[in-house]
Image 1 (cartoon, rainbow, N blue to C red):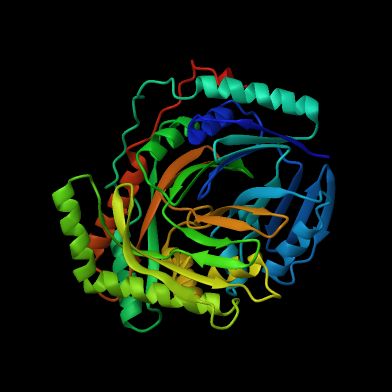
Image 2: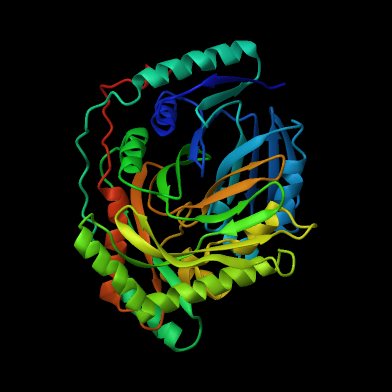
Length: 445
């Protein structure tokens, strides 16, 4: 049984949701969608996928499912949730691509997909907060927590920040780019996105970092989570896929990058340079072409179209060439079919995808995990919203790090692609807030 309560709400949803997360001792997710901010806590039901199969744990009961086909398996497991109306939050790692494109994922790396139907949830939208919990007593507790979070949000002073060296190259990134260019010119693939890791040695306050970073970015989506073994705060520049209840599908490929630092003269000059740069325009055009082809495989004939082609989107410390591809799902296809067709995002993998994913696994020194995967929400009506996991900070197994990549094509140069990763890292590295052990997280509880 789930009950809900709707109350008026005029505060900043991002700050209040972050305050709720800061006071939580349970798994939780904050997800900022197109028109809403959601905070979800606890795990009533959990869906996880590994290479060997899928699992549903609902209110303590475990059911295993075979993994005959990745998208169909996820639809089947979620369809087995007993709750009649639900919304799940979670993540998909980049390594789910191995299941989709013929690779073999490692069983030692943990789940490839992790989704949770929360025990309690608050959605901030249109000047109201909708609270959901198991019963009226829990709603009363949630209402009180919300009031305390509202009081706690927006009261902190500008924090001291953790400084890192975005130019520290521990993995030989330029050499990796040169290797990829050589393989592309030899004809093995057209484009591949290679990334590099920058470690963060200090302990971070993830909710505070999320709030600071959100103020300094203009993302398509944002998220803050502690779920399934991962902690992350991110400012996603694009969606992998959004699917409406009536089957409308969208994806937003961004490819082609220049710095954006607030200098109006220089930023305009860089924007004009983007449109003149044959390498950047080519990289973008082939990405849009592949996204449209992928959508055509799951959408009704004649419905796939480019709603917006090669405009410029400003995303924190960078600006991108951006397009919007839309269509309508075939009647027998689900949101998972759409996401499976588009995953991993072409702007974070390459062309052809199978060859690009193989090259990434071979050239990059470590698995990606959440980086270039997706953080998403999906509900029982079939609506899905999946944010591409870029411009993020991660914590797992006692380590904290940033990661950024660049799209490599035949005309790429190692120094320019390295500089692009520096520009992208600054979307996050300028906002890293250290943890303060003397401060209690109880303000939002």
